[in-house]
Image 1 (tube, rainbow, N blue to C red):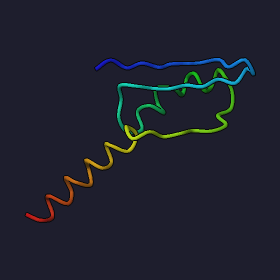
Image 2 (image 1 turned 180 degrees about the vertical axis):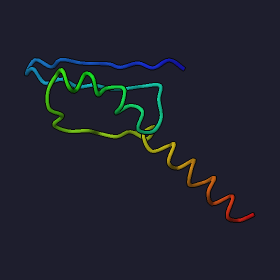
Image 3 (image 1 turned 180 degrees about the horizontal axis):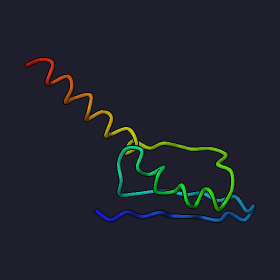
Image 4 (image 1 turned 90 degrees about the horizontal axis):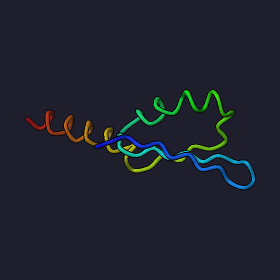
Length: 67
């Protein structure tokens, strides 16, 4: 799957970024360079993809404990 970073500039000048194609905290690392250049992050909304890697790790851990 390819990685896409979508940046939308609103009429107010506010920027919105959306990252697709990665799971876990990789999205934050991918946008660090943009955040440094574009200014302060006012809000960060994490999607299900952000948390999916952690859920899989917990499932694997639980499975291993039951053995």
